[in-house]
Image 1 (cartoon, one colour):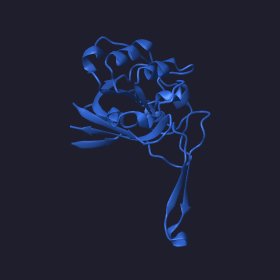
Image 2: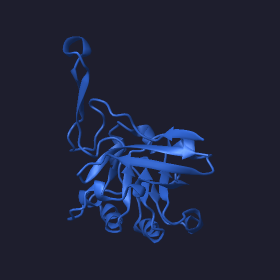
Image 3: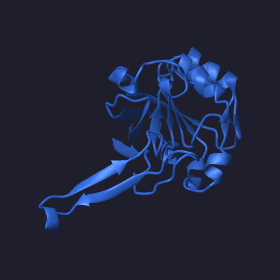
Length: 205
């Protein structure tokens, strides 16, 4: 068994979605001066690798920590869509995606993380593809890019309306391309918020 980390590290000044608050991570206490070490983090919940919950774009009051823990752990399914700028429905996905899996998309777009184009020129999902995810009752969809759509974020909303959570800003997904089966563990903070920074790992056979 191998453990593959699919998360970007959190650091001071890390890349954020345009318009979001900057990330600040500072060493607030020093062992030699204060007798102990501490760090202070200020970050919006959509910085780095994170999970979007429905409250992000729907008028609802269900916080992310109110989802069952088993929502964030499950059998993984990887789709190689690296040749697609628009990720659309394909009949072959009907057999490839099983009920209640966590589906990851590999586009290779994480190579641009931190660059302006990462947020302005990323792939998008079609409604037909999102409808497939709903029919398959997937737990989460994981992306190696920042968003499944752009304004007015109709794909976001459609997925949220069906309690499908969205993992954004994955990395290292290419390491799963030759893996026959894997489990995803994507535990967010137990936080009373719409979304959460998250450490995502794959347990690969």
